[in-house]
Length: 532
Ligand code: ADP
Image (cartoon, rainbow, N blue to C red):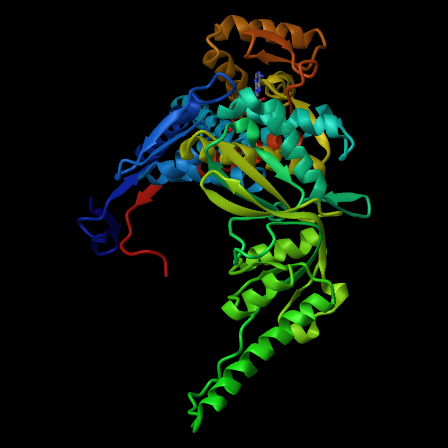
């Protein structure tokens, strides 16, 4: 479409004939329609009774998931406004790990409600202003509503992990898995002053198909998907003293190629013996300072392997650098480059290091570390597809537990806080005049989409359920929400459905931001080339 502007000397062609351009209401309607479609797509997967999506890629690979972020990451979204909705789920996923579906559903509903106002000729800037004021007020309401907990209160943390698993494939196994998640996090939490911090990098995840989900376990140490290098070495060591080496246990080759002229066979023998002697000295050094397990980032020479085995030292080679760092944190050892520098105080320790069969592979477990700053989560499940979904769900749970440890405030789930904030907002909106008030009320209506959808997906009548829920909350029972498992309304706190307030806040922030950004657009112009 060409864009023609009236200039002083007649019409001026601003955009070339073929440039794609949508202006004003057309652009707005199109963007809103696209964003709403994305929200509709994930809506049926919200809440514990939400359904899963099967995603099939061009090669026929299948992913089954109910995680909003994963669904949107995998599908090929073309429309620019739809892409912005996908961005919301990514931001929420990165910031807090959970609440991805909710944020997209809420964002889409904000736009649907805005559309109603646009049709009544309310200007989009007025809607944006109203939405932003409403978002701020909602955050205030959440903060008054939330309950403080102790960051190391294991029972509460388990409830939070369990809630995040409710809507996932692993909900049946949430009893065991939530304990594994909380155990893992409490092992690696650090305290600075009064505040607690969690670095999820310190939890190593290993996955292996074959057993049941319930066999998922936490190892207070590190699991390496590697075999012991030599069959003559011990396969089990109690009371391990571990050396961590990030260079090769080999005779270093010279940079230049050199030639040695040998005139009789004994010289050849001497040459080889010298190499042997050097390797033996290295192994003797390890033995002398009490090393019984050697973990090497690079290779280990065959002769060195022989001497290690002879000395009863277990060794593993070609371990990833990231695993070496985790091993140091788990065992309390130090990674060294030069064997000459190694001393007793550099050694890590573990109660048990052993090689174990995991399905058809042999893996080395470094277990029972005293104060491990790094641990391993060994995820099991019937098939690779199941394991991948378990991994995604466990990641979300780890994130919510981290969220609440770092900001120890919780709210009940099941749509209770959204319904509560909606009714508070509606009353509060009366303080405003005219059109802004309309926008705030629409914001409140949009918030109700969360309890409404959870109820709808559970097969409950949304209108009756919402009416009952509002009535109960108005009587002062502010934690009343949708008990989707038993298809009734209930006090969500008393049935242990709880979430970090950080997740709820992020949903509000990201969804409002995206909706307002889309509402502010009144021109979509196709430009050639990318940025830069
Ligand atoms: P999201 O990606 O937004 O986290 P989910 O599909 O995981 O979406 O659903 C999360 C919603 O489900 C939250 O609002 C949470 O409070 C709610 N929820 C979790 N467990 C229950 C339950 N047992 N009954 C009702 N709602 C629940």
